[in-house]
Image (tube, rainbow, N blue to C red; front, top):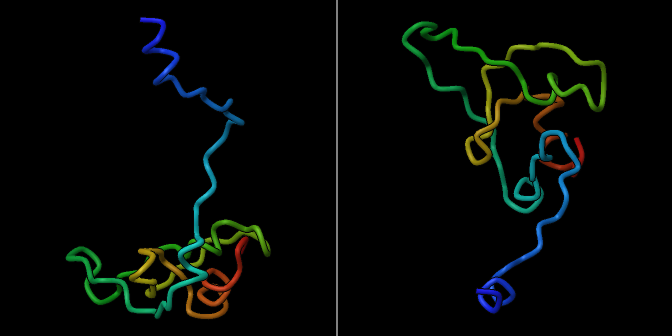
Length: 93
């Protein structure tokens, strides 16, 4: 039993707590284009969701701005300007 544990055991790193950071390294290496959020039956053609960058508040004052655009490759809702560019080009938007 001891040999099996020594052979297959991998030590776990201690948790720092909190939510893990989103890995947006894919955003920096692949081409992305904005597209409209798919319509829902409840909202119809007025489908809007909250922009991820505006909600994060890391680069400017946090706000709840609605957008009808998203990055289909990232499956992330983003305002066209300036949030889309910031999210796709900055490592820590």
